[in-house]
Amino acid sequence: MISYRENIVYLIAKAHQRAQGVLKGHLQGFGLTPMQCLFMESLWDEDGLSVGEIGRLIGLDTATLAGILDRMVNAGWARRETDRDDGRVARVYLTDKAKGAIGELAVTIERTNNELLKNFSLEEKLLFKRLLRDVRD
Image (cartoon, rainbow, N blue to C red):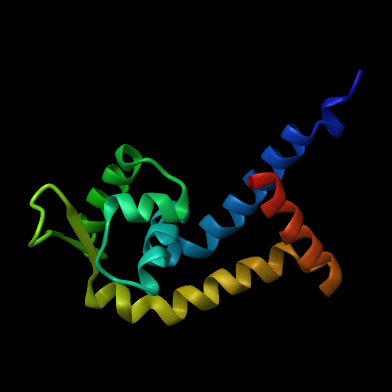
């Protein structure tokens, strides 16, 4: 029988807890949660995505995203606009506040990655990321 200490689900869950905790601590100064930061990141390359498009990019359902978006709008990080061509579609745009924080947030995310992977060689980092993508897919 496999020990829980060797169970891949347990190991991934504990690694996820650690990663989320580190990122959460680094984001406290911004008043953002890790999920809100991920939501914002999805708009960095293409502002004005629909909620559904954001969900497909980051792997979350629209019901979950609705709550995240509401909190981000209320905190001044994002604005929601109805699509001109389809009134059923909500498009999301970063506010000036959010756009102004992108550089600092990118540094924060990089610092988090570096902290979590500090004991890995370059080859181990690349392999680890590839393995995580393989498990995800």
